[in-house]
Length: 129
Image 1: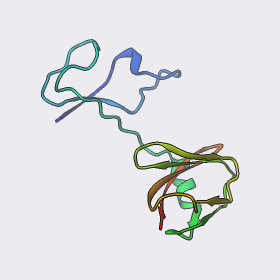
Image 2: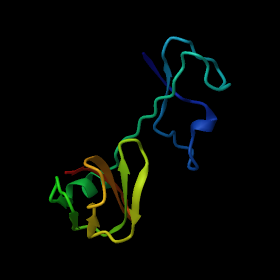
Image 3: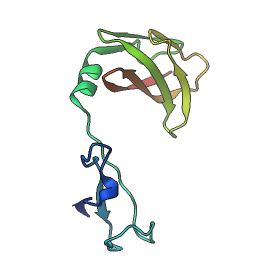
Image 4: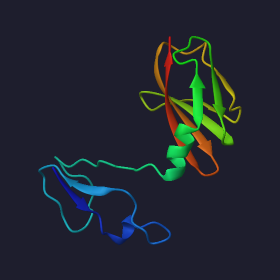
């Protein structure tokens, strides 16, 4: 698999800075222009955490984890919104109540909790028993 920096002008953001994604050659070859997906080509997106994201992750506690009924969320940062996703990528909850989350009606399994502050996004894994 070859990673090629995407230098296409469409790949640049509003400020002209390249976004964090690459063209990936999985054996079907690449072309100079994007004509859509062809057989054998897939798109793989990469993203990197910013410093603010790392701070939000390290400054936020989610407990008890695992839990059967409720999780508590504490942070030294101001969390403005949370989203909970199942492993299929379906959004289960979106809330501005950011100190507790009732999970008593959810099936047992692993969920992804996205926490948002004004400066970034943190991600925590939640286990519902």
